[in-house]
View: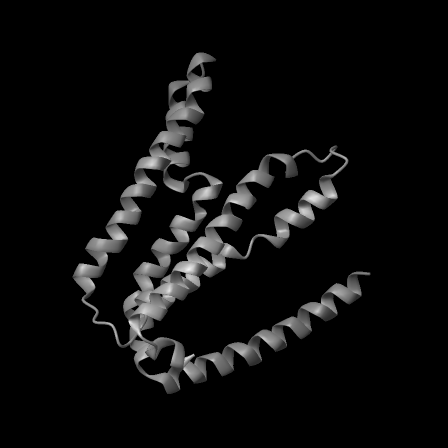
Length: 186
């Protein structure tokens, strides 16, 4: 992991770009499968579910790419510049597209002569939470808020190793308990 961060800028950008293209292709596959997965009566449904589930990994790859680029301790970091460049841009995209989707979703309610208070309530609720496929943006905003803390951690490699060991041990313990609960259920 340490060598990957210290490689030359050209090779770093190359492999990051390959990961982005690779991930983007599979995100497209997720969206292509989505309408068909909803149709449970489809004869191919179980195969579509299997395919749609197997191509879910690129979202995590995009997070890893963001982490590799933003949390690199060798890269200069200025918090105000970061929030202006990254956080505000993603927030603006989320707010605008959530507004558009929320408006589109209430148009049928307006034509059905629903109560204005109910329509406004639905509109503002949908605007605040966004559409399901925009969850990536909300998670990215949460990551961006935590970036200053993560950068402090990444500057100290021993802290990162310690956190990874705790994560590994705790996830194994949690998995062991969850497995016991699953087995009891059968």
